[in-house]
Length: 506
Image (cartoon, rainbow, N blue to C red; front, side, top):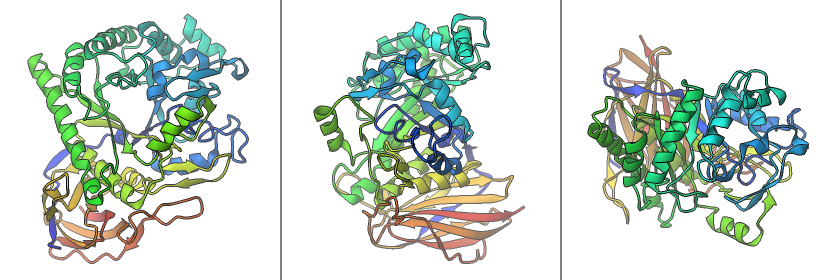
């Protein structure tokens, strides 16, 4: 394998990483809430019924923002069902997922849960079956100090101080025919505009996210973005986009190249935003909220069977992908792609956090919690990927697969934390068989020491998975050679996610 070369210079910057790039998402879907984060009978449950063993796995991730309550669920959700005494809350049929929703967890409980690990809530409003009035009432309930119907109702329910929720999603995936209350781009654009304006009369300080395309293969993409933004461009702060990757061709080389579609998706959305700005003669630069992203394909057939054959259960085992080593590597390439667009992607929500296509799993019926393979790239990204993304010069060998050409074996990004004097290089080797020699040119820095090389490698078994008592996929420390003449040289194992941590003398 010829060597890959990466040149890193602190003078060439892309953008500061917004901490919200490391956000996540919990929807009332499957076992994400009930039998996931909320299990009153579990030995570790707190007074609110939330599992503390799960919280202990979440805390190291340093998640700043949690999107809630959906997702498809929100398009049929009545927020009033989730407040007040629990024994008076109605049980509803959740039409999005054909399950039974007991409303034991609502805004009050969820906000308290997020406070346990320092996250704020990103609240979504129902623009499927409901609209302006319900959205404004929820905002009033959450953020108004008191003296009005809904703020006084919040106080009566035990929360004197406003929740102060700053970021709000105007619906979810409204371009999708599967969505309850699905709309055309013009219908949604008009509704989102009027909802945004009405909500800001109550709280002008809030940030608003308009719904973009659910995935790049949608037949309405990117015209959906252009039409919606034509309505809301000056009245929202972010446009959302969603994407899930999966091994749909059963070819591993193809699968490892899938993040190239994420790159193209982001480039197309950014171009569309800038086109609308130019047409409107606007000086505003639209930012992006990639508020659903992950790997999702393992559970699709089983999910269809559950929804068809055994509907209306409480917390059915829906969307429970078991992630492999190969999935962790593809996840890493997707994360690196987000860093490449840190100048425009200010919010990104890993979807989801517990049990539902999640880095954290719990065994049904109150069993132990454990970490999936994708937990580790997300953890290490959050730990070491804060600072300034640098623009790097990269040369790498490439390959062709059945559906992709010119695929780089090396996928990489560099983040410079000047305050801490630390440089981190995230690197993936897509080769299935060979080590990839990587030479990192660091001559623009005064003096560097390669202090740590963390590696999650799946070359021996791409299908290896973790389980409650089986941590097969855990990052390992690799030997670090000294930096010589301003160059660090490492070998990236086949099918691997790597974190190179360098200490920089200033």
